Image 1: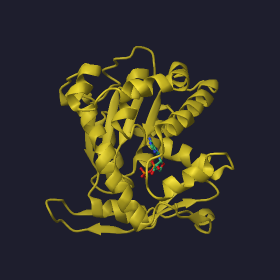
Image 2: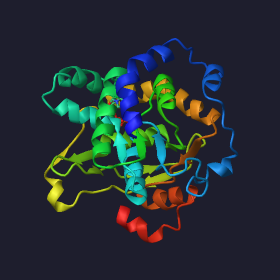
Image 3: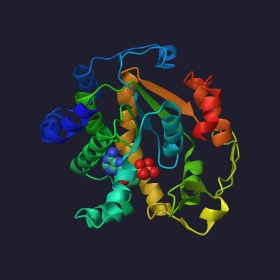
Image 4: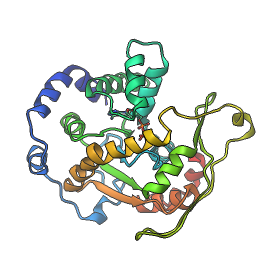
Amino acid sequence: MAALARLFKTQFPFLLRRSLSTTTTTATVSEIQPQRQRPNSSILFPLTDDPKGSRNFQWVFLGCPGVGKGTYAGRLSSLLGVPHIATGDLVREELSSSGPLSHQLEEIVNQGKLVSDEIIFNLLSKRLEAGESKGESGFILDGFPRTIRQSEILDEATEIDLVINLKLREDVLIEKCLGRRICSECGKSFNLASINAKAENGYPEITMAPLLPPPQCSSKLITRADDTEPVVRERLRIYKEQSEPVEDYYRKQGKLMEFDLPGGIPESWPKLLEALNLDDYGDKRSAAA
Ligand code: ADP
């Protein structure tokens, strides 16, 4: 992790130039990083198939806005004892500070656009360095990488063990984003939406109960400025354009685990643990809740 932070910080201009000079077709990607074709079953779970010796897990969460990357990455982080690093949170922290970048970031984020790679790598290396000084190792990344170029730079810096791709139908994603609320005091995320989406267009019916705040948070709820319908639709468009190719990038490396969310947290969390071969971590589950 120390090496990763240093590499992002000192080598970023070099790595970026190198990835810019490389076309990003899938054929080229496979030349840069030899494909590790593993059968699907061996993706199931790196705890028993430890390719990395003594270092901690280095996982990535992919998925559209509102799918629940933060929720499930946060739970796995508590369960496995590795830090959950969400670039969206790093961007929002910088935005709410009075730092020099905050105005520039506000405009980009509130339009649903992606922040420049340079800013993201700077925020990420600062976060990794802070973690290193606290003795952290490994990571569960959420919201990064979000473009092929970011994935290539990450691959130059370190090896990713597993990529979990969370999936939900688009109408539900929009409802979830619009229902999302955050407690301005403790930072916890809640959802006021009660979702009852009928089976249609080949999608099964899906129901999700609201995730309501406790009384101490309910008067302090705020909505993210980018959780309005037009901005959510723009974020989904940008995800399809820039981030969906990242799914294919990792699929070709044999590292992608697809996970269709069957419902809300009570239905999805045990199934996710099962897919990850972590379901015998029963008593730790409640600790992560
Ligand atoms: P989402 O709910 O859309 O997944 P996030 O909380 O991950 O949103 O990110 C919020 C915003 O922060 C993004 O819309 C984007 O402007 C910026 N951002 C976060 N991560 C990245 C990244 N890896 N590259 C570029 N911009 C990013």
